[in-house]
Image 1 (cartoon, rainbow, N blue to C red):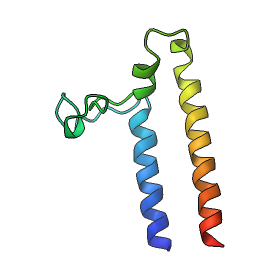
Image 2 (cartoon, one colour):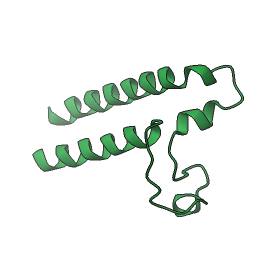
Image 3 (cartoon, rainbow, N blue to C red):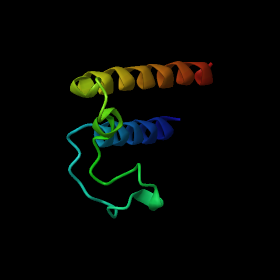
Image 4 (cartoon, helix red, strand yellow):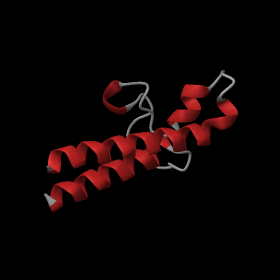
Length: 83
């Protein structure tokens, strides 16, 4: 169970980093991961999703709130599984 927790934490950290504006690695081609155009190599997904909307200036706040909710949900699910 401890190994699974470490793997889950590593995956979540990678996803948090990828969706943030600080991702600067280009690990897959420009056309997207597995051909999915929405998963571009430059990261910063929240900026892409809010482009052209009035929410654009608040992308870092939306990113933080979104990941807080995701991590809270993961914690809730893990508490239910451990019982």
